[in-house]
Image 1 (cartoon, helix red, strand yellow):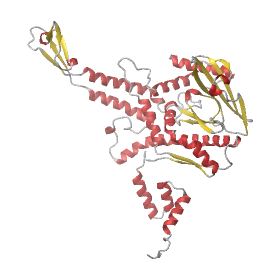
Image 2 (cartoon, rainbow, N blue to C red):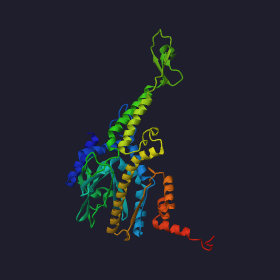
Image 3 (spheres, rainbow, N blue to C red):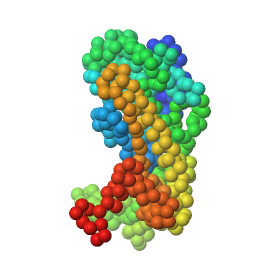
Image 4 (spheres, helix red, strand yellow):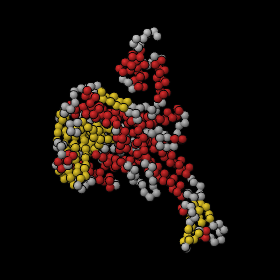
Length: 458
């Protein structure tokens, strides 16, 4: 284990001691999550002399997050409360959703945690390394957890544990502060008032009547092969870490081929001009010339070194590795590999896109579920603390499907179905224009009504 991985284990043990309870996260899972973070930050453990990184982990996470949230829209509506929730909090979450989806893709998940900020609702985003599950329900959903917050000030590291426990009483939130624990520990208990940002927090509060936790875990949908029984998600590239290393090594071989095959001229020292007793290279790139003690009988004062590059073989090898990475990560071929080696016909392209479509659709479903749970938490906080007027809400989601479907082709197909009477005109409007059923029907009715003052027959 690396120093970073050992530190993570020490932190888990320190938290367990402070809470007096066990955290169900194994050493294998902690090690895997550490590796995923390192790869995403392009701090690959195999990097060294002669090994260059392609930073494929961040590329894969970014590509899937982009496809999952491309042209994504979601709103809360239905009442004054819904409108206020949508405007004051929810749209800020949607505005930043691609970035946090990328983080979730990289390390397996993130947490959306609603809270009160000076009597206003807000949402905190908690990355995987600051989130520790404590209990799950019968469906394997995390219902109790602890969150780690750290602040460095005046040469000291202050840590705060925010424990959320769901039971028959409701949700109990407990805050504990610590100091002088270094980077991999909590240290000794201190008052919350020791840190200005925490001074207004209650040490413990119970919110009765709640049957769901006050946080929402956005979990990647891939199966956890590291620890099948864990409630934590896994990175989208969790099963490809070995291939990522091989890709970096093959890429480094390619770079060495280019470097080692650079044009050079082996020149006899007799051919190098002397200036004050020192060799003087010709007025060209100095790297091009290499002074050698050639055989005196050799009539050639200059020998050109220009080997034939084998980059084609290296590129083919690298591309083959990239194709395997695409397959194991659920990406369409050509996403990170050479697109010219992928499908050429429209039918082949659609078939290959299905792999990305399936992966992206699963991520979208997980995101939709997480956002629904987040809004439930926001709504409950608004009710318990009487922050917003009473009212129901409706949550809508709209995802772009261009990953697998050509929109113009689909429009033509749906228009043909309208002409055949299979679809209604209002159904076409709701799909194409994003209108609700009520809005679409009203617009169609307005179009069918003759303008005031005109003869309907005209």
